Length: 571
Image (cartoon, rainbow, N blue to C red):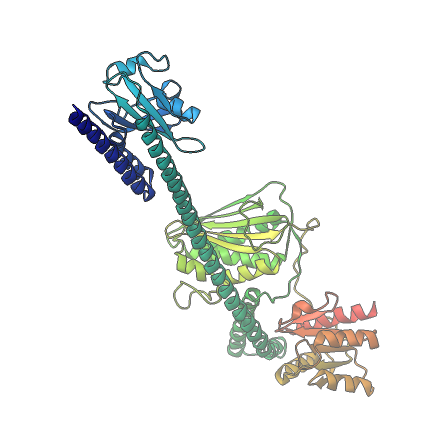
C-alpha cells in the first residue's frame, strides 16, 4: 500500500510538473505573440493541458455578443457561435473583470442551462483576458460536477494574465504599426506636396524669366516698329501714289499692324501691357461681342451665353477682356474641326474650390467651354506658355491663351484650365469684383488729326531711328523739332534757353527714366507739356495723370497725344 501511495503521489507530482512546464512554455510563446490570432492559437493549444480540463474555449467580445472563436474539447462545444454577453458566462466574466468558478452548471442560476444541457459540461472556470476592459475570455470545462481544484484555477488565472500582457503588447504593436503607416502616409503626402511646390516654383521662375525676356523683346521690337509704322503712315498720308506702290505700302502697313498686335499679346503674357482698369459689366461686354463671336466661330460651332442675373461688375480693361475672350473663342473653334458647342458663362465665384493663388475677396468666374478634342496633361501643363501651340505651322502664334493668362493675373485674378482628351476644355478666368458700378462703354472713335498749330518740340530718345521717325511725323504736323539722345542732353538744352511747346520723351533710357524726367519738369517748369513714349516695358510705373503714347504709333495718335499733353499743362 505504501508503495502504491508513493507511486500515486509521484504520478500526481509528475502531472503537476508537466502542467507547470506547459504553462511556462505557453507564457514564453505568448511573450513573442504579435497578433490576436497568434494569442488565440497558443491558448487553444495549451490551456486544456494546463488546467487538466476536459475542454477549453476561447471567446472574443463582439459588440454586445460573445463569439466562441476556438475550442479544444472531448466533444463539440459552441465553436463559431455567438451569444448575448449579458446572458453568457464569458460575457459576465468580462463585464465584472474577474474569474467565475461554477462547481455545478445545472445548479447555478447564472448559467443558460439549455445551452449547456446538450454538452458534456458540468463544472467550469471562466477567466477574463484584457485590461482595463477585457476583450476576451478563456473557459475551462469538466465533465463532472465538482469544485475545480485550486491549482487548476491558479494556473488558468496565470495563463490569463500572461495572455492579457500579450494582448496589450499586440495592441501597442498594432497601434504603433498604424502610427507608422499614418506617418508613412503623411511623409508620402508631404513629399508629394513639396514636390508639387517645387514644380510650381520652378514653373513660376521659368515663366518669370520668360516674362522678363518677353517684356525686353517687346520693348525693343516696338522701338523697331515705330520708325516702320511712322514712315509708312507718312507715305500713306502724303503725296499721291500709283496703285502698285500704294498696294505694296498697304501690305507693309498691314504686316506692321499685325506685328504690333503680336507685341500686345507678348506684353499681355508678360503682364506689362498698359491697362485702364475700370468696373466692367460682363453682361454688356459679352452680349456686345455676340455677333463678332458668331462670325469668328463659323456655322459649324453653336454659341451659348449664360450670364448670372445681377452679376456685379468686375475690375478689368474692356478692350483687353474683349481680345482675351475672342482669342479663347478662336482657340476653341480650332479645337472643334468637326463642329461643336462653345459656351460662355459668368457666375459669382464661391470661396470653396477657389484657386489658392487668389487673394481674399469677391470674384466672378468666366468660363469658356468647348466640346472639342481636349488636352492631355502634358499639353495642359504647357498651354499658357508663349508660342506653345498644337496647331500646324502657320496656324496661330501660340499667344492667345498666354495672353489671357497674363491679363487675368495683371488684373488681380487668375486662369485655370480643366481639360481631358475627348472631353473638351473649360478655361476659367477669375476676376475681382469691382468696387464701383460699371459705366456705359464710350463710343469708339479713331483719333483725329489736330490742326497744325506749329511750334517747337523737343524729342528725347536714345534710339536714333525712333527720334528720326518721330521728328519726321512732327514735321508733317507742322512742328519744328530739336532732338536729344538722353535726358541730360535734353535738360541742358532747356537750361540754355530752349522753349518748346511740348517735350516728347522715351520712358526707358539710361540714367533718368521718362517718368522721372516728367516729374522733374512738372516741378521746375509746370507750364511745359510732357508726353511720354513707351515700348510698354515699365509703363505700369507711370503716374496715371502723365500723358503717354504707346509705340509704335501713327501720326494721328501722335497729334492726339500732343494735344492731350498741352491741354493738361494748360489746366
